[in-house]
Amino acid sequence: MKWLIAIILIPNFVFSQKDTTISVKNNTNNLVKWNTDFNFTTNGLNQSFLNSFTEGGYITDNVKNKWLDLSKENNIVYFELNNSISYENNAKKFGVEIADRNIINVSVSKDLMRLALFGNYNYQNQNLNISNTNVRLTRFQQYRFNYSFNYKKLNVKTGLSYIVGNYLTSYNIKSGNIYTANYGSLIDINYEMSAFISDTANLNPFANNGNGFAYDLVINYKLKYFDIKAYMYDVGSIKWNPSSITYSADSTFIFSGVEVDNILNFNDSILEEYSNNEIFTNENSKITSYIPGQFGFIVSKNINNKKISSYSCGINFKWQPHTTNKTTSFSEIFSDGFKESNYNPLIWGSTTYETKYIDIIPTFSFGGYSNDLNIGTVLKIGKKKNSFLLGTDNLEDIMNGENAKALSFMLQFIKQF
Image 1 (cartoon, rainbow, N blue to C red):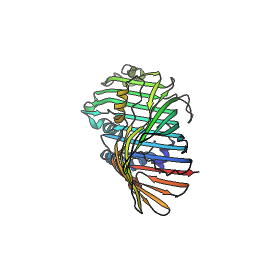
Image 2 (image 1 turned 90 degrees about the horizontal axis):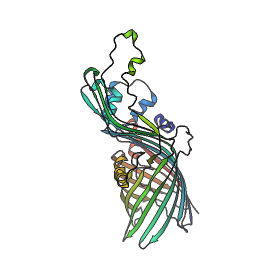
Image 3 (image 1 turned 60 degrees about the horizontal axis):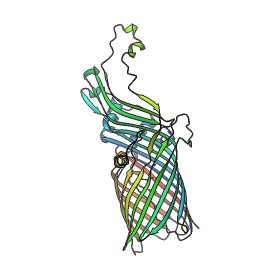
Image 4 (image 1 turned 60 degrees about the vertical axis):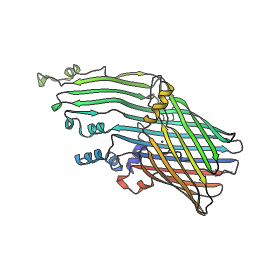
């Protein structure tokens, strides 16, 4: 588990894959909930890949080729760690929540992995495509207030969150390619890249380097024997302060070697003729990043069975546009945000199996950041006013050892009074 500790401790570098809200029968006026969510998912690379970096040692060409065989055209790594505490008043139909959230969302093209593992020597006379490579690291606190009301046959729950941004690093290579001629006699690099970093002078874990808002909307409707839920969670952004740093490049760079007349007279001044100091531009500016929003539908039904009390199914989408310092239209942000989230629609089904002391809630899902079949399980211990929940979205990977591509868990304590 060394790789897990390393990821949590790296400050320069997450809710679960779907809306996993467990319904609680609140027959009292007050409900307090403490929740921890952890999610680490890749769509191709596995634990052995990460162990090689954290444990050190020589990495052979055979190992590198194995990694390339595992990798996809776009390799996604997603990490999220959330801690939250919330209070709901059933009588007055309002709730408040405080959450601390840490998110890493990475997509790396396969050709860029080839370049990083083997260099460009092995790819002479080839064009390596490094487009659609992006890295987003965000830490923030979220203060949420929600209120519910009934409208005709609908139960509507609205929410507004105030967000305090602590830290942001964002890199995005929108398009790019690298061509290497025979023996490296010519290297042609063409790319469009942008990078954003929050105020580096204030690196306190709880620093206020940006502020923003997010919105929730949940609509519940009962249709005969079925409960239908449509939801929108965490659709919002953070506007970072003007001390944030912006780097950008939109260039074609051709390197055709350095001509040296006298090797004994070689020095740094000779290289200055071949360097291009105008490739990158940087400035301090206001930038906007987006937190992962969720959209989806859930259909559930209670059944009269001694063991199985209900079943449900749904589909979940995620929305997270790239960081920007430009003004864009709402339609562009909204439509691009689903693709730029690196998340595929997640289709899932679940049921609740009741025993005397424990409820077992198995879930099967397909899609998300890994686009694999996932088996999840939640154990709910406690039938009265106090209950404890323990769960994972990736039960199948717990026993996969170094071949595991995902690790997730959820801990939740609920007290009603």
